[in-house]
Image (cartoon, rainbow, N blue to C red; front, side, top):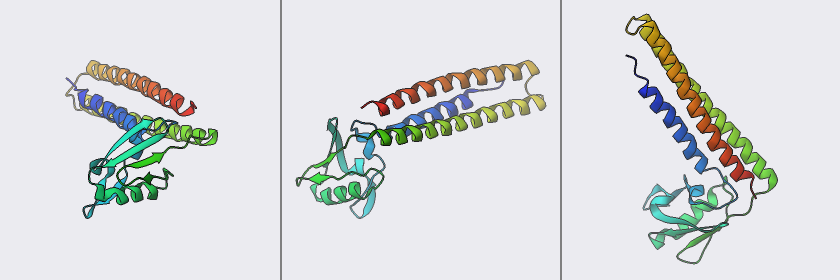
Length: 184
């Protein structure tokens, strides 16, 4: 009996990684995930922003960062300002950092949608590689006579059905994100 579970788990992990990646993609609304990946110089080492501060989105066009330790305020502001890919200009009032999130231009929305397309394609490539590995393992097991011919064909059907299922989920997630990006 050939076990397809490891390949199913890998495909689900690829989809989950894609969904996590989408959280970082900017849409018209402010959300705390936009600041994910920012590293702050605090306590003598670089730390993720979410470990030194609380991040909220109190308004659709505003992010609010409250450092756990007020002495880290300047470091938080500097880390956000220095991240060129975001292009944010944070301001602080001595205890809270406010980050206005400017609305996206149509041109910028189209660029982000194109980047989304690239991420979708990268996920598809990862899924195809997992499918290829599964079919190769099945063929090797058949050639080694550890599974019969009909079991190998069953594995191919199961993997292809799984691939279709994951691909359709990928399409749904990507379409939803694209709609979110293109909505003013």
